[in-house]
Image 1 (tube, helix red, strand yellow):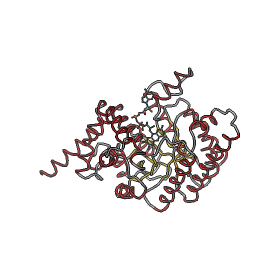
Image 2 (cartoon, rainbow, N blue to C red; image 1 turned 60 degrees about the vertical axis):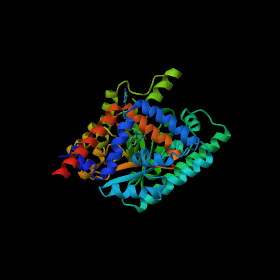
Image 3 (cartoon, rainbow, N blue to C red; image 1 turned 90 degrees about the vertical axis):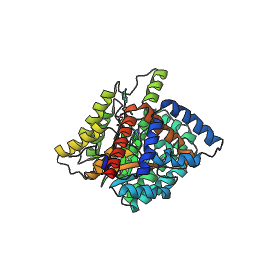
Image 4 (tube, rainbow, N blue to C red; image 1 turned 30 degrees about the vertical axis):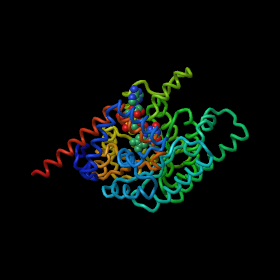
Length: 391
Ligand SMILES: Cc1cc2nc3c(=O)[nH]c(=O)nc-3n(C[C@H](O)[C@H](O)[C@H](O)COP(=O)(O)OP(=O)(O)OC[C@H]3O[C@@H](n4cnc5c(N)ncnc54)[C@H](O)[C@@H]3O)c2cc1C
């Protein structure tokens, strides 16, 4: 019987030293004062070129990132692969809105697709829309206002980058996830993802859009998408997540005086997420899903739904996914039971992935349950190993 409490399996990829590092790290990030101070101090130190890069790289970077470039990630990919846990290389450099940077990012993503086509344990590539296009422009396109000639030209470039990445994924037969970000850019992203699926998902789901189930309109989105896929005869690929921008979404809605698109309560989001899983599993002939979640109930529900619907554990249309350094108890136990699992493996120069690392630290501080759960599992495994050595 599958259980997420089996820490021997959950941490089978971790040495005692890895476990000790994770223990201290999760203890530190559990302290909000320390994280707040650390965030400011780290940004200051990096900006003023204080020599702390090595320290960050050996601690929080090692926990949550695969390396500074694709080659440095190979060790992580191999060690996860030994336990049948796949890797999704996530180029995590953020916040630079220049045409040259967008082109560079698109090249990095194409590099990850090429690597994925050669390596057994990289089932997906991934990219963020704002990595390949200016957020203000994507917002403008989403709001359907007319663009100036210059903006139209820039938008054509964004579309070309999307198409170049998706075509490469199609030619290499590598599944490709398009991350979801703020709701005010999602209309354009949904439209582009739709066009890409229509073009490249005829034989199998190559392009996957992302649905954030903290939004109160995403079940309807899924229903419409399925109808369209059936009518136009393509496979619909979708990553299901709860959504990472809740505070920002609510603050903007309040500031601008419109009704927030986010569910009122966590229970509503949980209900919608689980309903989305059920909807997708029932339509697994046309839909491929990647369940991006650290929620044990949702991960277990997906297992149950697959069993109830006689879907084999390794069905190619169903994937579980978690972030590197988090919820190994789900990833490794699910993989050990024969299900398809892959971890997001963020990578990039230490300085440039700092915003990502700070978000992980903040998330593990604010979502108290998560840190508590990670820590209690690490402690349990440390104790198990100690008593095993004594016996
Ligand atoms: C592999 C992977 C890929 C991801 N990709 C994306 C992505 O492309 N885009 C993206 O936005 N996020 C993405 N995320 C993050 C994800 O959306 C969640 O923020 C994160 O995983 C926490 O949700 P959970 O399902 O793991 O579990 P839980 O910890 O059970 O859920 C926490 C989530 O519930 C929701 N929530 C919490 N409180 C409330 C409330 N009061 N009212 C309504 N809803 C509430 C929020 O979405 C919150 O993040 C990804 C996560 C993973 C693991």
